[in-house]
Structure formats: C-alpha cells, structure tokens
Image 1 (cartoon, helix red, strand yellow):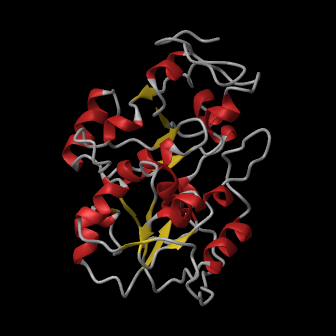
Image 2 (cartoon, helix red, strand yellow):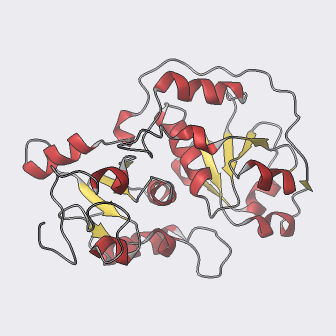
Length: 280
C-alpha cells in the first residue's frame, strides 16, 4: 500500500485484504472506541495531533513529539498504516496527513462510517485497548514539508513575494461568506475558492469518498485549477484533513494550512474577504 490511489479504502476493500501486514489506528474518542471498534485496532489520542497553541490550536506539534506519538503506537517504516474513526474521517484523516507530513507515505483512510464496518464482515469488539505494543521506529527525517503551509507562506503568496498558492476553503458556505463567525473576523482568504468538505463524500450517507472523477469535476466546477499548487483549510484542520486526503487521492498537488481559520480569523494583520469578494 504505497500509492496515492490506495489512500482510500472502503470497509469491504479493507476486509478483503490481509491485515497481518498493516497497523490499524482508530482515532475515535476513547469512550467511543471502547464501545465498539474493529478487532486489532489500536486507539490513538487524536488530541495529540494538534498543538493547541492559543493563536493556532489546530497547528502541528513539534516533529519529535509527533514522531514519538506514532512510535509509541508501534508505527514503523515497513508496516502500512490504515486509520479510521467514528466522525466522518476528520480525525482519521488528520492521522493520515500527520504521517505523510512525517515522511511516512504508506498511510490510508478507512472511509465509510462505523455502520459499514460490520456490514463488510469486519469483527467488532468492545473494551479498552490492551494489545501489547512493540515500540515502532520512524526515521528522523525532514519529512514532507510541502504538505503544510503556514500563515506567513500564504501571505507571501498573496503579496507576490512567493509562488502563487491556490487556496481551497472547505468550510461551510456561511463560514466562507462571513455570515457564520467563529472568530474575531469572518470571511475567507482573498482569492480562495469554496467547496465544502461534505460535498466530497458519497451522497448515499455511507461516509465514503466520491469516485475520483466526481471529485475532480466538483473541484473544477468550484473554480479550482487541478494542476495548481493547492492549500486547503477549514477551522482547525479537521474537515480539511478529509479534503486533503480525498484531494491527494484525486491527484492534486495539495498541502494544508493547519492554523486554518482559527488563526487567520483572529489576526488583524491579514487580508480577508467577505461574501463572494471585497477585502476587509
């Protein structure tokens, strides 16, 4: 499991493959995990995937801290990882993105909601995670820095001081226009296109991703250049982690702004547009 096309697995696809050669991580809340999870899945505390800094609570922890989290769970370079959760993929995909950011490419999302797990024949068990874990090992490498952008890089792009970045805002339409405000300022990054993350999911309610050709068509209809360097964000890089995973699987050159709107919308020194345009 080492290609972009294998970043998305349905429960049925997962059930059909041998699981002896992979590690399954469940990023659901601990009590939800205990109430029912796929047999053999290890629980990961998704809160540790974020820095929780006041100015950017969705930001990335220090690299050694992130690497230690995964090594403690037994992640090693020769074992593919599949992540799942009970929340439409937000924490599972944040797990996948974090692993790719560390330079670990063999990480995929088990998409589809928990109801699909049993339907696919996957054994469901209850209780805490008591599986003995052999500590993993990940190389101390620079990782994949192109998978992340910070506010400074976006500002440099907007001012023309750096290469252009295409900004994808995957929040709700009301958040994008500024009608719904969760921060001091509402609106969106100037020039951003909008495509809500839920539009990338199959409308049948299964929680699975749409087929690649549908995803690409939706992006083009939203005004995206499929060949442009793209940075996606939401409010805390949870919804946008799903968008990043699906977008990367669809062939985009895509990174994420983990500070997201929780950071940008509380700064006074950055440009913002409201509605469908108009700087504020």
